[in-house]
Length: 102
Picture: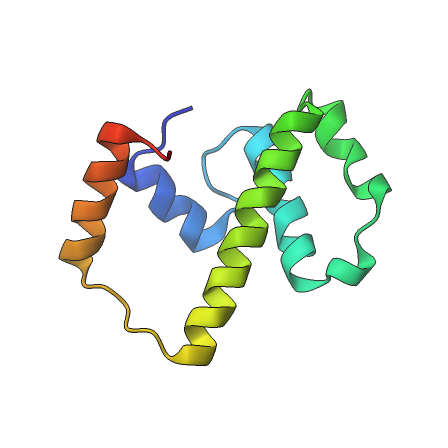
């Protein structure tokens, strides 16, 4: 699934009402719980994702991205990293769209 700027903005505004698939919405809810209350997340919380047809590999990848983002975000906050300008983000996004993550 490809996300454009409008879909991304809608997810950032409110993922619960954004025009995304139920699989994406459920994954975002799971990742929210994993981020905010990791101690409360159990294997049972993965079952709704599986019931929507998500495989273990897709779920693992979502968890990996979540964990890496949360770790980097916490380090950046602790060390007061400078946030790039919107132009720098746009340049980086174009690069990633062209070559992907490697």
